[in-house]
Amino acid sequence: MPLLISEINVPPSITGVRDEATKLQITRGRVAQGKPAPFLGLLNEDGTYWRYLVELFVGDQSSIVLMEGAAQLAIGRTRIAGLIVMGSLTRVESHQETKLNQDTGRMACFSIDRDELGLVGVPTNWRGKPKEIHLGTDVERDDGFAIKVRSAIGFLNNKGETGPVTFERIVSRLEEIGLTISQGVSLY
Image (cartoon, rainbow, N blue to C red; front, side, top):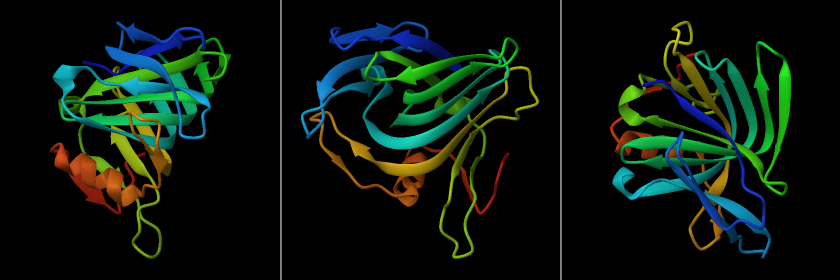
């Protein structure tokens, strides 16, 4: 199964939607500072999940789409999903770019079954600390895709509370769900 991608519109007046293309829940809530924000959620059958605030880059061969920006990354027992809340979605063939902004409701989401992912590459800096996380498949395949986690900002729980997170914690969660991690390796 390829990477499932959907461009969505969830205006602030709507409290929640289920995106059928990606099988994700997007609800509206408030973060600890009282600001309204979208919350990415997996379905019950995906099991318990953690939601991280990250900066992402996503490239997909089958839909020929590039997405990047501030995002929520949800890592569940059976699926990994993302919601780009501030950034852009570019359709490569037409060079059409859509600005994504959670305040207007225009966002993009993706999901992939854990079993569709191959090796997870975690390039490191000169001190041996992770500097990115690379997920995906061979991008040369017709249904190939690449997901790069460029920075780890924090976590976001269902109560709207946030806190710090490290690349090491996200990598640990990926190992917990059974993915093979290759430290020090860049996949793309």
